[in-house]
Image (cartoon, rainbow over all chains, first blue to last red; front, side, top):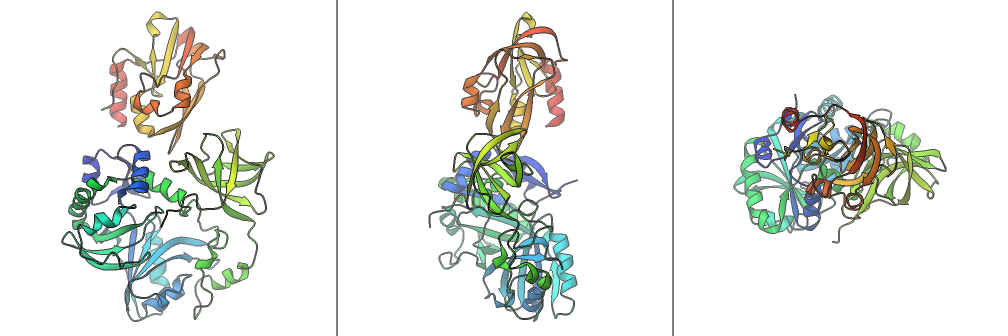
Length: 361
Length: 129
């Protein structure tokens, strides 16, 4: 039985098609997912992301505990700022990708993927035992609503006095939105400017309605997981379970820069990652653009002259490019003459560097 | 509730069939229910005109943002016409599934697979939606 979010009734009243995702009952789309995708690129979209996990670390050694538990240098983060980072196992395999917010000198919030947050919470508790810190999984207490797109700031500004102009990308601050306490973060997963609002469960429904009312004149539409997936794919952002997994290190995924070897002290996975950091990965993560109209999908083989040289990790039709696109791991050095085996047919693909889409700033 | 016209026949695989009564040539498409479940259709592949098919064969595919579904023919015979318009504009499957979104026409030879009446198809889809 899938768990509903606090916004389930709202989704149903909007006619959403609901789907099971990582054990949660989530809106896949409300109407046309293409229209939702385009709304986020051109105006704004409203997302329910309450399935994400929120794990808090509080105490004088919270930063040190995270430095040991994660690959990033979190104790160096200024209060009010956020970082993209990862948690790996002793072998350097990625257990999850995370965003860590420093809420105060002694308080951090770790946002983990829905499919992983229990595992991440347990690992953080285990890895923090030697530190003066309390680890608490508060995922059940928080809803997360994201407003994403070029009009996001205008829309949110009608509901809050918070200094949105002063809020940098990858920063978060507590504020009041429509009379409700929220953590307002300038983060997202769409390739657009936008905000993620962490609120108490009981505030989710009124906040959603307030954002819809404020946003509709600006073209804001509710957007589901289908649009979220095509938006993040165009933006070249990895998805755990597709581009990232326990069988890969951050270096394999081309994200080695998140590993901070120069931070003080040991961290889980350090020796394994130091051993491979200068290796040339056998495969690299690239973008593929289809010349035809058939869509390469997760798990399909990438071929060259009939030989398998890689595998698609994510694929979808791109609204923005007007062609099917994919992310794929492809053997190092292979750049041309590529195809994807789409149900027995070799469909030609052009290799491009990621991302497919970058917003104009 | 999806539109399910009374004057068509249906398959469990969510195709509609027109013209079964005259027994000569039938027209096949996918239902509004299927189109809504698929989401925005981005690619349609149809059989070749002149090819011979058997009832129950997979003869094409409909691809949407999130999934791929095969199209089956509920009757055997010769493919006499395909709808190039829907190949060029797959969004017609969503916007006009029983009209310009039709898929192909078969000159019928032999018996049709089990087909459903509109009432039976309504019962089937109300259980799935």
